[in-house]
Amino acid sequence: MESSRREIEVMANLLSSNDMQADVNRTYFRKNHCLAINVIGSPGSGKTTLLEKTLPLLMLNLRVGVIEGDIFTSKDADRIAAYNIPVIQINTGGGCHLDSKMVNKVLPVFDEKGVDLLIIENVGNLVCPADFDLGEAFKVIVLSIVEGDDKPAKYPVIFRNAKAVVLNKMDLEALTDVNMENMRRDILAINPDIKIFEVSCRKGNGLEEWISWLKQEVANA
Ligand SMILES: Nc1nc2c(ncn2[C@@H]2O[C@H](COP(=O)(O)OP(=O)(O)O)[C@@H](O)[C@H]2O)c(=O)[nH]1
Ligand SMILES: [Mg+2]
View (cartoon, rainbow, N blue to C red):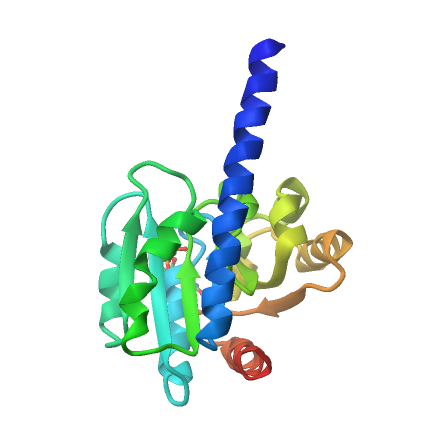
């Protein structure tokens, strides 16, 4: 009993110190007229691929920067560097999420060029990143439909906290038993205001709607 109470206290302290730093980051983003978004999803859901498909169109009229979060390796940052935009990899060295201090440390990288939109790809995980505010304007979930239509109900916290969800790999719908009606119903039951995009990064379907929504969010910021 005693040890579980201590664990709860430690977690509460950790989250409150994270929230304080997140507020500092938020002030920084506001001051620099930068919309920061926190992209969250399981490993392999297609987060980096979504960025790869989104960046070329965003870059036509926006200055975009990317932070890649991963446990090890710079594989995702290497993929994004091909687009010739400011990108930095944060390795958590085992941690299952980014925190606001890690993000704060790398912000000077974007100072010189200035960015209108900072996309933060979090560590692949649908649970831990949900609790850690990075100072972003909002969270976006990338969920591959092959992960199953039961996932929103099983991981409600992240769906409650996100502004949009990109349901990716729609090209595989016919090969799976996923029920898109149940998926949408469960997502909206958790968060009636969430914006849902059905896309295939592989085939390109649905990307236009997602990109124009994101551009509008930058314009409204
Ligand atoms: N069939 C299909 N595969 C996809 C799609 N989007 C991404 N992938 C593949 O899914 C795998 C994981 O993608 P990645 O972007 O690295 O996922 P991340 O771990 O969430 O960043 C890669 O092999 C991608 O080519 C899609 O829309 N359809
Ligand atoms: Mg990735």
